[in-house]
Length: 459
Image (cartoon, helix red, strand yellow):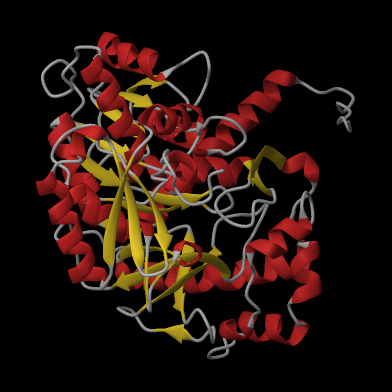
């Protein structure tokens, strides 16, 4: 392991003062950029975009070899459409460059090394951050979270703290606001779902930060322990991270917890990409990232309001700049002003390209199936699993939701919205809940693994 030699005459106190002073400068920079109006933000972003391309092509081994020099010069000179000539970056590129091929600063400047296998091809990717990269993101997220959180809140954070930086990022951003933190983590043997519920009760937590599926699961664990989330717990806000959420899931969470559910969006390699406002709309963090929506097949950039694949370019990441990174997320960007008054454009997340599911002669998604099933369910536990058999959607339901009314409602919605038929099986609830307990990113999974009975794919 390489270590850094301490310079002769090094004064730890002097270095600490310099570090603190630099952090104050970073905070001032974030405050200035995040206070810009739309016109000023666009002008700042144009300059930041050119600087990012220059930095990446000069210092990143990957981009110095993949972006033609004439293209980089054209972007620096501000030529129209020059940026769109930059080749896309994909997750496969990040995997192939693992672990250090994307690093664009000397290693001594890196203060964080994060890693994720995420929802892509399963191979690991690395993410690096300088102190400025990391602190700027913390402060930016804190400013956006201030729309609904303040020093009176107690935030229980039940997302991964290991390797992927989402736990630490949200932890520090929420701490900056003066909130009390309850660091629950995710899937830790030392903090089981039962202990999480106990911690929510003892701490008087007002905010739960986790995936929507985990929140539904914790609500069910509380109910079985004789704890009514609506009456006995103080959680009034659920901040969802790590998983998309259908409108039906948000309604179920609101009913189960008597809480408002807010969505966040980001990934390990990019940090936070979109954050909610007080109106519960999802706003792009345009003070840190440049966003495009492109045609998934041709790569052509699409105008605001079009549905396509989200591509992002970092504007404030020195350690690991990303140029035109294809996220694999199907999104729509809306430029119309939000009632909250933010100059940031809004994001509509439509699921992931890799999650598209063939059903007969149509395509659907896990989020659409989730919306159909959870809309029909009226009795806890609010989870299910599914599989596809040609043009039939096979749905595994817990015993409490096998009544004729629920099944008839799901069948009608599947036919109306998906043009398909539905078939039902019993959910192996114990097996499914074991998967939820041990997963860092729980979701409603394919029931060939968790549905029990004679579900497809089981021996």
